[in-house]
Each structure stands twice: as C-alpha cells, then as structure tokens.
Length: 332
Image 1: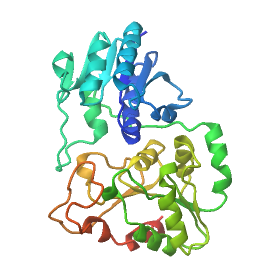
Image 2: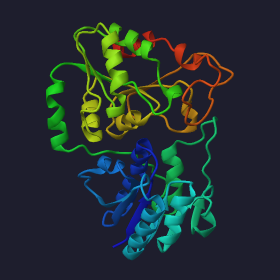
Image 3: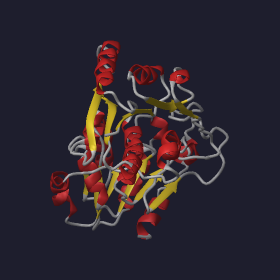
Image 4: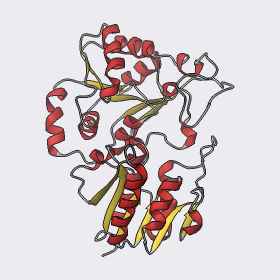
C-alpha cells in the first residue's frame, strides 16, 4: 500500500485548500493511505474524514522545536513513500528531510528544497497566473496527471443535525472577522448591509470565540430583528454544514470563504486590501467577488494584510458599497 503524507501547518484556510491534494491522490490511488500533518487546533477540520488516515499534530505554541524533532522521529518510523510539503518554511522543510520518505516533494522557495526529490516553482503575483490549489497540484502532477480537484470538507450527519434547527427559514451567513484588519469589511458596512436584508430572511454571524466582540457590536448596531450571533458556538464543520444551506454566504478573504468552496456553498467574497489574483479566490459554482470598482494606487498592499491601513485611509474597504451585496442577494 502506497503511503502519502501531506504537510500543511499554516492557517485554517491553507489546510482547507490542501485537501484538494488529498482528493486528487484518492482519485488516482484509491487504495493508498493518505495522512496529513497540521498545526494543533486545525485537526478539527478533518474530524471523521472518510479517507484521511492519521492526522499528525504539531504543537507550535509550546516546546516548538522539541515537538518538531519528536514528531519527525515518529514520522520516520512510518516509512512514507511520498511526503508532500505544501509550505515554504524551514521547519516544514526539516520535517520533510527528516521523514526518510522515498520521494520528498516541495516548493523550491523552501530553504531546504535542495534535499527534495521533486520541487516546483511557487509563483504568486498580482497577475493571477494560478490558484493556490493549482500551485499545490504541481507537486504531484507527475503521478496524478492534469486533473485538479477542488478542496473538500466532510461535515458529518451529526454536524448537519446540530444546525438543522437553524435552517427552518431562508437565511444568509456572514463571517465579518479576519485575522488581518485590512482584509476585514468595516463594521459599519456590515451593519448597513444587514439592515438592508429583507426582514423574512434570518441572518447568522459566524466566527470563532475571538470574533464575538465584533459580532456582538454588529448585532447591537443592526435593526434587523432576525440577526443572530453564532460566533464561538459552532465548530469548523458545523459552520460549513450551516453555510451549505444558505441563500448566500458573505465572507472576507479569509477561512470561511474556503469553507464555502469546500462544501460548494454559494459565496460572496469581499476583497479589501488583497486581490483574487494572488490565487486564493472562491471556488464554489455560485460565487461572486465584491471589491472597489477603481484602481487604487496602494492596492494590493500585501499578501496577508495588516493590522491597520498603512496609508491611514482604508479606501479599499470603505469605498465598497454595501448595496452591491444586496443586489447579489436579490439575484438568487
């Protein structure tokens, strides 16, 4: 039995996109064992996954290096045939090299790529040549051919049952937060948008425990009687299960956008300081991108964004009209 290990220890959205590699491998090697290595906390994305075998967890917040070497030793015992490293940092490169795998795959930007058997360019420009799933796919194109799978999450029946009571009426989901402030549609704009949503449509705000303050402030500022804050109350997969049945999901350029892609839920992605051409755009069949309608000299200002606008004006966010979001809802 061929044994694959996929390494992706970055953020939640990166892990979701990495599942596309697993989907491609499963399609071409249905009897293979496919494992993944993630940072601690992200393993919940793969709960009850139908074909991911072992999920290795690297605790990066405590005893980082000691945990890394312990993990590398355990991985080496597994004698993987292929290790596929989707990251470009020294630590993931070291895990790849120490794995002892027959074939080590990764990007040439990794500091230890000289020790990889197969390496590819990771091209990321504002010209938008490749989506991240396509960039990742390059690492296995010699064994799976030209097909490109979508990322996919697998909420369980229990996950769907948990949110069933929230699906009694037509509803939309909004994920207003982001790790990076300059990726975040302004709070006042979320409030204006939610106030314009028809009264018969339920509005659910999604996010993690750290997003509750923002979500509560949006709810408090809104006059919509059926707006409800669910931040911190749903797991990753429960959130994806709820997004699956929404009339529309409104998100920033952040992890919830990838949740929507991974369950093929309708999505409207709001882009502030970043652009889709970086290769992280939505992949759902029904998708929209909302952004400013003019060229702004400072946009994009960076791949991930910043804690505040470097130019102090934040026009890339404030100049996005909320009426476009309502137009998309009316187009359904």
